[in-house]
Length: 132
View: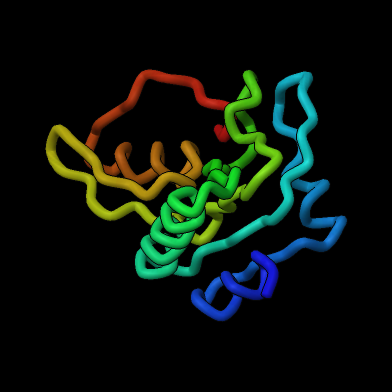
């Protein structure tokens, strides 16, 4: 069984090795291009834990494998690029809580959505991210 088949049997999210998906994750806002072997899109925290344990087991067996998280692909220094497994975090896009002086979000929340939620409480995170 290959990596795609093994992971596909273990998670509810998508596991792709098709050319279009891999090429879509080969670039970000940097000058770099690295095509991943697989693009994995976890559906939930259970999937994410399963993927992490899967990679840890493969590494223990001396396989050269890694996961690199990717949100919107707007990084400007190539931090979301990998030749191994691109972990597409697009399903993790929820604002969990906006408190009086703090907020909890998942990694793929767009700043524009975050800003709208914090503005309702009169709060502002003074940054200008690429996702705005």
